[in-house]
Length: 451
Image 1 (cartoon, one colour):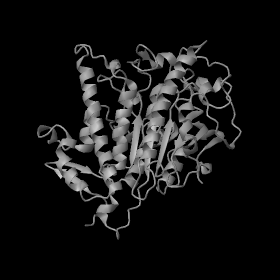
Image 2 (cartoon, rainbow, N blue to C red; image 1 turned 30 degrees about the vertical axis):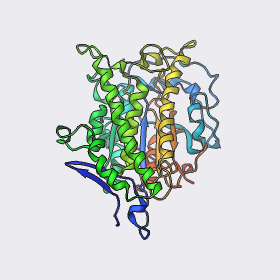
Image 3 (cartoon, rainbow, N blue to C red; image 1 turned 90 degrees about the vertical axis):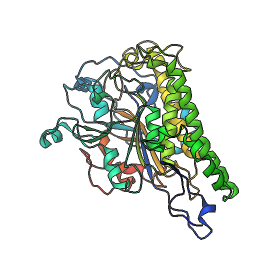
Image 4 (cartoon, rainbow, N blue to C red; image 1 turned 135 degrees about the vertical axis):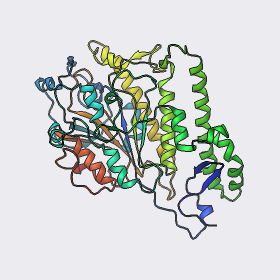
């Protein structure tokens, strides 16, 4: 028996594509080369930069800059990078990444375009991946910061072999909008054309694993395909049988966790939905696991993952961090004294979720024996350099994964201060095999990221 790219389990409108199973393909069939994958993870409201950037732990506490006026940060004394490549030493915020220190590169010195008079948080999210300068927008007759975002540009080129060119995921659990969509989205098909992210785990699950009419026939995908999988398992070798069992276990685990969240939500006052009771870690990891499955199964090769919305005064439950729900955005403006230490706990919490994603991706083997992370580029960043100052410069960025041995990891890369973040986006596009010479307002590439 031989198969082409993948083996499928199919029953009555449900389809699950499986990882490559060598014992099904036959001895003469060469395992297909894994596709490159890109994940862009976004965290809101900036980070406590003094705890994230090396050498700044004892720096001066930031003052607060409010309103629309991002250009006020020009008046602040900016730390100038000494460009170069240095050994990576994890700062206190980055400690959760200790098991992955050889898989990551910390990048500093990146700035983004901004336009004074438009809300800095809205710009931070909505122009993060468009990088369209105000001048470019005016010339094109478009409202800044609209444009076609990086994930969509890359998806156009690498999405032809997958079910979805791109996958947009959000971990904003609130059902009702508290701000405009510009605060709550990083992916755009084009000017004014949002690429809507999926924030409901059920809807994400349905999009990835079920057809529209599927729920009216059965409740669980894993129940539906169980008999087929059991029959298939008899044809597999020992190692492939373990792979299939692990794969089916991941699907079942996701369904169990969704049921747990359903039960939790049913206990909440329906008249006044209290989304803050959703434990943030459980929610983020559930969404992340479905994204990882989509990458593993070849459903998509490009995904954005927005951890939360910009600025919303959303009260959220950071389980294991604070005994009661807190408002992340408000905390960014109360960093004096020990305030920054409380805020840093959220940064560390988010870093733990990033570490979880990297750990999961490292443990998943692809057809040729390499890991999912080996074949991926997974970035972690924000659209604000610091939540208190609203600065558009020194954006925090971590790049993980080898991108199929194109990236040398375990380093601290200091770009020249003022390097445009669009240069990094152009670099990622090139690393993903997209042959373009410029992107948005870029003026070069970050060549030091390559091997």
